[in-house]
Length: 196
Image (cartoon, rainbow, N blue to C red; front, side):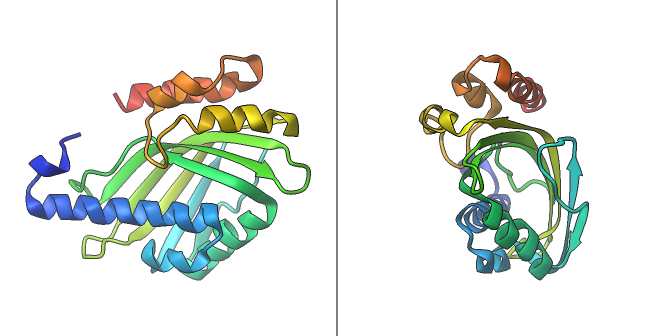
């Protein structure tokens, strides 16, 4: 990706706006602040989920910013806490469509089990400023469940990643090589190939 300093001012400004949208999405979702979605989604935005995991459930489609806030912020935070989400690349402002990998670490409120997931985001931004998202497709490739006792170790390696912008290679460097995390590592390896 070209650095923002080398891009034309208009492209650099679009990149900054798109990155702001993505950052606000994590602020809203991870920190239970549904009001922040006003800075993320256009009012008629549509969110779709392609779920390849049996370990977590979401509706296939949700339409409208208020409904997205209800499902992906309010209800999400009723079930999960200690949520840390990572983007595995950044938009560069050269397109209204941006696809990237993601990694999430969180715990279940009910039983404190650790959840580690990864997949892809496909964002579509409005061409006009402030370049809010008009559509988002979340693909959940894997969701690994570990016992509550795994949280201290998980927190220790996860805190070695830059938050919220990192990359698949960095994630692979810190995610332990152990059988229960192999599905997560396999998906991160695939995402590393896509983004290099």
